[in-house]
Length: 307
Image (tube, rainbow, N blue to C red; front, side):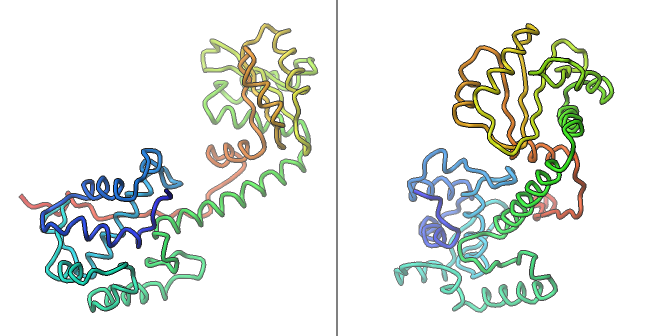
């Protein structure tokens, strides 16, 4: 079963609190996970940022909506309890509770109006505090926009790389590996790039700053898929150098046969296609620069704790 959206979580969340006892968000997440029959993998699925679980985020927003409608309350930090209004709603045996259902409560309407006024000052490209989609939380909306921008940037990077010379591409590959922590200094790492004289190897880089091991590199600025014969040629060159590790990087893709072959040989060969290369360039700031930064903040409950 797919992870339910935050509005679908509202009614089960309220029913969970129907015993009028105090419960934590973690208790609710566990109970609703069982209610929706989510697997351990589904419960552990993370938002694109990797900072929070998707299901926990959606449960959190279901709680926020119910609280704004005064169907639940927080008698103390970290716990929640159903209100008399919430019990009254449950007594009517509603089929579904969502944003439209909650509009019957003035406190929720006021909450939405305040959000709308705030959003009048944002541009059309900015995510709203209460997004238009009934199934996506604000955090998910932000992350979807971010992923869209990242994918567009990755495509632009590959287009630029393909317009560069093969020599520049080899140096670019070294820059990425150095930023990832390989090769020590940029000068040391790039000393032998393009100078090995072996048709199957484009360069050599240290695995660590001490140079305890080396990694051989093959860099192909191609548009067509790289097949098994090219990987076999590279592996043969590695064996000729008595090398145990290699990285084959291309701007294109690898065929399924090439990937299968690389996974079954004793020599450790890592395949990095154009998509993975552009992702590494973005992650390690190679050939890209920041244009804007947004920080999503939340209330620090510990700060407001009296005692």
